[in-house]
Length: 142
Image (tube, rainbow, N blue to C red; front, top):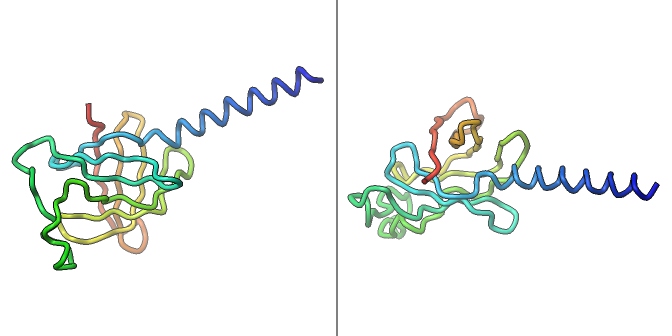
């Protein structure tokens, strides 16, 4: 009986480790679809966030949040700006419940994230329901 309890506990631990590994699969640095930003996704307490940490092309260094609807924020640098907030892992490589800020338009959208089998990240920003939105594919920074 003790052996069966130990086996059951071991199987439960393995399953929990697998789920935890899936939950954290989006952690890391990603290059956005336009190739002008590197976003680092981290786990901040209980939610996943994404912060612009740089750009692959030096021509984009020093860009400011010039499209922000708040005039007082238009002089802040994009580097260091959190653009993904509030995400939690659902299941089947899906993170939802968050928002994405688009510095190119100054707008914030609801958002879902999916990790594709090829290792890319599908990012869908939308208004209202997911049907009305745009999807980008981000590549993991090497």
